[in-house]
Image (cartoon, rainbow, N blue to C red; front, top):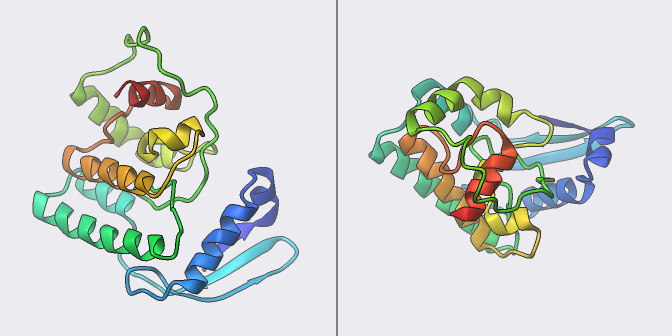
Length: 197
């Protein structure tokens, strides 16, 4: 059961996003997408009763394993490709895919290129160590994490279905390397690195 607090959805401006998620789960009949059995609400919460899928999420797996072998990563990426294709056939775009499949929209208006702010960039080993120590905290932050979101979504200049494929590539990179491709200590630096490519 997914339990969503209504006041939080309103505060974060996620009402339409949650409605779209619920509609997607109700409309799409695919073995690649979790099944929604029921949805209901009370004064405080919206409840989504979904199929139980044991095993946890990708973030939990990556916390436990750090990296995946190429063959294991191929398996999970192939499953994700099928899931993305399932939702895109119904004209849905996930837009904010990440390793825990969080669905919070990003709100980073200050994400602009800054070529002079390279002093905070770390070596790959330092990035990996910082990511491993802070992965769960970053994923549950109130702002979310820009690590997996396509640049065009962050820039809020319009985007299409290709943004989901960009996000999947970022997740695959993390599976193989141990941290996302543009990772930094703070979300703004991650954005800047991403915009510089």
